[in-house]
Image (cartoon, rainbow, N blue to C red; front, side, top):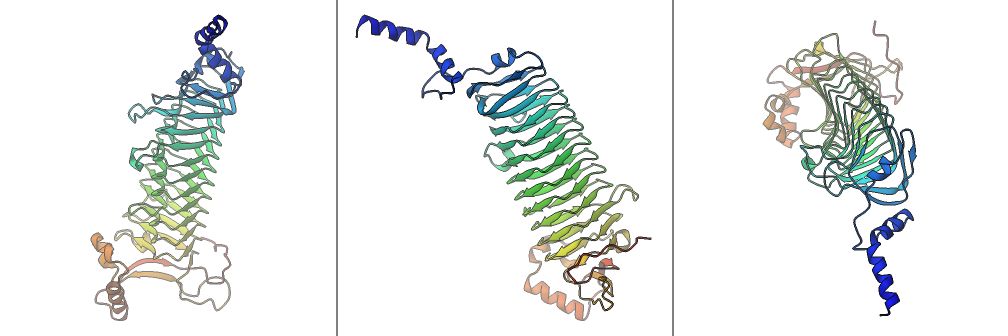
Length: 429
């Protein structure tokens, strides 16, 4: 090798790091075995408050901390790699916009809440059109208010379902708008001590609980699609929750439900489609008789059990819903008597009455009575034998000549007739 070639090789080796930076800035991929990706933090630090950073395409290393109001726009061509340690991007300021980034490879600690993106004590931020994957927790909000999380794609690591992290996690965070996100293979979306948040138009699939509310009053869940999750929506100790215009399908876990309410009063479940779930709607009684749980204009179809109420005080309004092709339309606990709940104007596909005056309302009430079904209602282990030929035969004999007085489950005084047309509810006065 000539002296000139040896000199050039030495220069290349000496300035190899600068060459890697130049290639990254120019949009070239790093060659195999090259130096680690350059850090993104210097670019963040060099951006003045209120400024916009359009990072050159390429792969950058984390972690990243943002402590002032800036805009970071990756244009869909920038990857931030956390290197498998801690949280990848942390926002601890207000008025920050993160857009068009691929955030990946967080740490693996559940205790430390290792996340793709953490917003902590930051208000009014915009997080949109990012891809977050290969992380434990996707997006975590802690004491963060009035943020908008929109159009992001979030995936946890493909661990067993209980070992994943939350796709979105809110803790003591108020007034946030979570909309239009595509979330899958996570554990839950968890909302804890976080009232008045809105979840609109999201898709959540292949997870444990699509939505898990705890002490999160007046939450709005509207226009979402929750499919193939163990449970759709769970609300615990949350008052005034509105669940509207959602599609909840294929929640067939043995203990799962499309919608499950526990100690959550004054809830409105309106115009949802709840299809092919173990239980369509599972709810106990509201804590106060005034704060009733209302189910209005929902389609509850192809479930094992359409509705299951197990509280002692009743307190449910079931108005104008469609019950179609459920194995068992409704169950009501022993103490939650017919008089404790109100059923009016629902469509029941197994209604056997007539509509001789053609007013769209059945001439006789729709009723469900428990005959042999009391065996598995009162002895949970006997549920295994539900719908078996032996119990079906026993139920048939019970209806012909009851061995004991059957128990009423529900009575709908004005059921919709089988005209196929949805009728307006008569006046409740």
